[in-house]
Image (cartoon, rainbow, N blue to C red; front, side):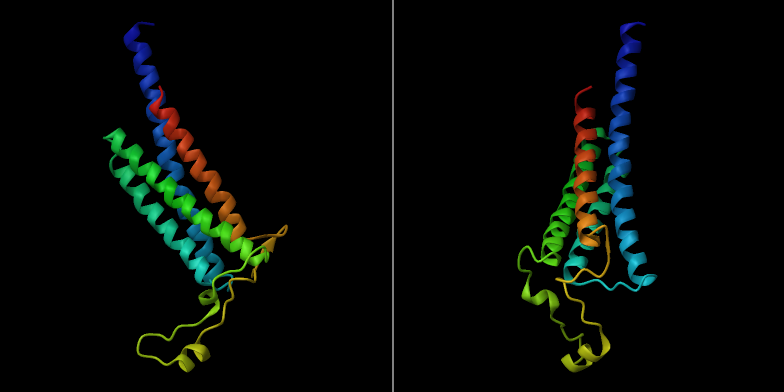
Length: 173
């Protein structure tokens, strides 16, 4: 093979790593957020306040991943947004890890996490009567002793690491 062919093969492999990073960056938060929504609307598991915080971080990750995909013709910018998506995904993992610790009673949670707030224009009594009280310190569902927050932490940290490693591999052809 000529030097030109070798460079092209290396560049093709390199671009593939960035493509894989973008793929994980979009699929992971979509899957985790989708699972959370299915567990809520199909499974009847209502989110507590910390569950909602984890969702916001995944939504931010989805936005960054979409930017990475939109900028795929500009690899450095695309890589930057893929890494930003990894940061948001890891942030959801940090919140999930903290939340799991609260559920396992390893540490105290936030007092406001179990409090209800009145809806706009409504009274606290209407809010209490119309909404279930979801406590952050009680896991609604577990599998093998791991709560949904714990699974979110595991998958989020793992996914963020995979994205980082793909981008790192892309940057070193």
